[in-house]
Every structure is written in C-alpha cells, then in structure tokens.
Length: 384
Image (cartoon, rainbow, N blue to C red; front, side, top):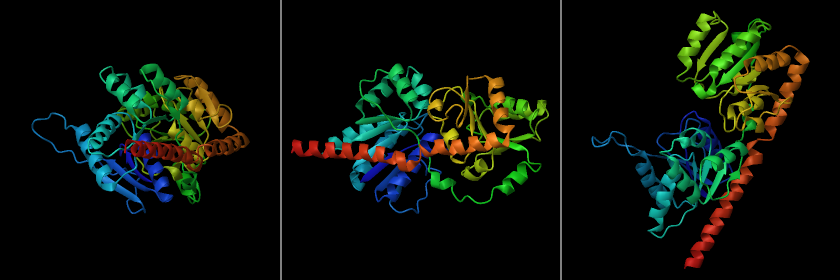
C-alpha cells in the first residue's frame, strides 16, 4: 500500500502515535509518505519505505495569519497525484480532516479517487472542538471522512455528545512499541544521579498546560516525601513551568524536584523510576501513562476520560477523582512503602502495557486501510 500520513510534528501524543504507526507500516513493506510543516521529531528519514513532504507556508503581507489549511490541501493534492497514493490517514481533526476533504474533491475533478481516514486524538474534540466557531467545520469533516477512528471509547462518546455525527466511529486505541523498552541498558547511573541515597523516584511527563494539573503532581510529591525519601522528575515544558518552579521555591524543595525539560527519548529515564503521576483534568487516552507502564512503572492517576481504559485500578496502579491529592498521595505511599508491593505493581504495569503493543493494534489499521482501498477500487471500476 502507498499511504499518506498527515500529522503535527510536535512532541504531542498524536504526532508520536502517527509517526510510530507510519514506521511500523513501512517496516512491513508499505510506502509511507509523511506530510507536515516540519519533520516529525520521532521520524528517521533514513528508514526504508519512509518519505517526508514538507508543507511550506510562505508569509504574505496580505495575511495576518498564513493560510496553512489551504497550503496543506495543495500539498496533499500534489503528493497523492505524483506519488500515486492509495489512501490518506489524517491525525487530528483540525485542520487536517477538512484539508483532506478539499484535496479529495480537487482530485476527483481530475479523475483521481482517494479515501481518507480521520483519527481523533483528544484536544481536537474535547478542547478546541468545543469552540462553537469550529463546530460546523469539524462536524462536516468527521461526517464526510471515509472512516473515523478514536483512540478511546471515552473520546468516541465525547465526539458523539458534542457533535452531530451521523456516522460510525471505530475505537482503535493508542499503542506502545514494547521492543523499544527492551535492552535499554543499565539505568543505575540515572538512579545514582537523581537518587544517590536510594530514594524513590516519582516522575511526570507532559506539556505543562493547565489541563495537566502539574501543580497537583508537586503537591502529591510533597505529601509523599514527608513519609518516604523521594525525588521528583518533571519531563516536558510549557506555560505552567514558572509557577511550578515558584511553588518548589516556596516549599524549599528545589533540591528534590528536577526539571529536565523536553526529552526526545524517555524510555531509559522512565525505566529508572518507581512511580508515574498523571493528574490531568482531561485526558482522551493517557499515552504518557502507557509509556510508563511499558517501562514497568505503575501509575497513580486521575480517573478522567480514557485513562481508566489504560490504567487498571488496583492492578497497574490506582485511579482517583480529579484533584483528590490526598487519595493519590495515599495510593502512592501504599505502593512505595513496601518493596514486594512495588515489584508486584511494576510487573502488573508491564502486563497491562502488553495489551497495547503495536503488534496487536497495527492489524486493526491495516484491515481498515485494505477495506477502504478495496471499496474505492470497486467503485472506480463500476463508474467505468
């Protein structure tokens, strides 16, 4: 198959999932063409069967904001036409689905028919999508897609609740590449750096936006470290970082909390940790939690959105109501206070992660691609 994948190239979950999906498809012999305004940060262009097409947006004095959606549409038309793609898979509804729809109809006017799949990842529906000014476009683009997938049952229900969607939505969960967590090498050097006195290591990874409630992470840690010697690692960056640093200074815990910024690969540092904290107010899936579990790290999380579909309460970690810092701290201390309990939860976390290995999820996408391509070819033959 010749597959076009449209995604955001940034550190967010949708871009990571789209990139890993494309890499897995390419490894099976498919020709995969990534189309974005920048090379996705996890994409290796020296891999066989992988191609990258940059969407170049030019500034014109006429525009306050460059018309990315139109430039993307033109690039999609160009790539489909000259690379002879079989299918387009767009990740994130805004503006990729509407651009794919426009490209599809431009190509139809030239006698080229190509189906497109829209995968909904979360904030395109739960945050941006609730903006009434976007609602008609998103509703139309979802309904006009040849297939729609959502990364969790929770996100599917949110989509059906907030938009007048008349079509079926398939749930295909996010996934993890478990082989990336094997043979990662010795992690003792990381533990010796951050926990030289054998303290427990708590960790959090996010983009530090308000919706992630990272201040709750620091508050939970503050309760835990008063009972159990511990360190906190914060990976990522964003608008809340300054407030978090100020919070640590006020509590005189700067020597216990380490801000590590954006890291491209988190497998080793996760594998050196004991407990992952995810306190989000809204989370369509909880990919960061799944990445932690793949590294054999149990998860203390809120029970919002799609997180309960990933983190199994009492098995791979614990779930609490959003903002219930005391309950989360209590659950964290239960796991950390006994080595036997901690090891059991670590093993369980990995068992839970196995359910989401890419080797188990990839066939769902392959089946959907083949179904749409077959239908499209049958329709083309009937028209002739």
